[in-house]
Length: 220
Image (cartoon, rainbow, N blue to C red):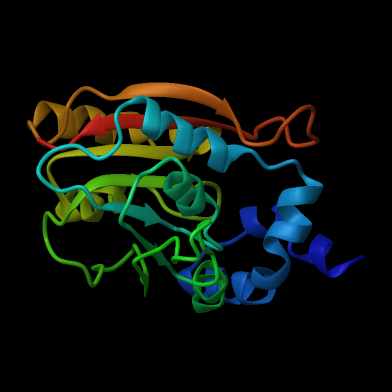
């Protein structure tokens, strides 16, 4: 078994606690893109960035975008190349954030304005209503976060903030994301969500469950 095999999908899907996440991604950070993403033809980040862009990007008075669970910076880099800036990133893994900090644009400017270590099961060290766009790919999946963490993301979204949050399709059903979204909509916190079905990996893949729903809505 190679190191990348040890840090594969089965290991990621078996995570249970924030510390489990930290330990896995500490060892995975340096080879995540060259190994895992390349080997599995990972395209999820392309879809999330494109959907956010297609729906208009950051909305409201704030123009900054928050990349939630930014990892090594794949989504943020895509967004920056599409012209969405400034971008901040948060992730539970300091090792992943170190890699994200190396991402630069053609003019050698950093892809991210700031990177913050954060655990979405607790309060994020970011101000209320400070972002006009919030995106995420790969954070809401097996072994990771349930819909309750969206409450904290609502806190940091400004009025009119546009969200494009990817959720593994099976995880979405099993963790009742639909109920959370319906309640938030009924409470007047968000607009009616639009769900966009996307593939996480290009072509055939051994994990048939690897499709995601990108949930698009705005903060009211």
